[in-house]
Image 1 (cartoon, one colour):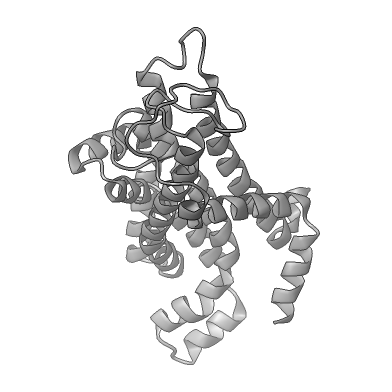
Image 2: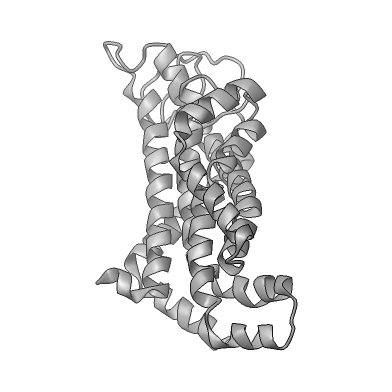
Length: 281
């Protein structure tokens, strides 16, 4: 309890962490309360390519749809994709990192080799190929992103596990005959939570970048609003290079993608500075 209180007190005094926290909180609130904030954008509107104003906060697109509504619902899609990607990465990466760091024999070497192999793969081209094969539903895209996100989490978990497994209380647990799975998941897991949490915030950020990239390439879910899908529609309609330019159509989703990524990165940086003060030196 004392450690938790100390962590929160340090976090509140960390400017980057707090900025990131409030940025993430804003995105989460937008995603949760999207139906209350704006009606789901569908069909056609009568006001086409209207610039931002009092009536249309972010303007309208070439179908007369409210860009603000598209961005708000895009926040929900981004959070959904990020959450699934993190879940997939954690289900694979955490056990892999824990086991490879604790078991230093053949099992650990095999898992460590697999981690290194996955880390050297060209991620984006493989994501494009697999997403094209399995289909473009939002769940498929999120799972594909998660499948290529677990190696970094596994590597961080493994490095932390290697350090902790050499501590005296772990050696004492082994001498007492406590089963390996209990040592790994009861005693080691809780002590690697810090670096794991930092890495998960980075996966949340990169998941949105990956989803936006796939959507922009036409491999996203066409039935769901996402920030990448909005950019794709704007590009296909030549809105990016049109004169006069409907800048509001592509600017706002770009701003929110950047805001989302920066917020999660600042949150992760703040957490890392508290848990690892030497990183500031």
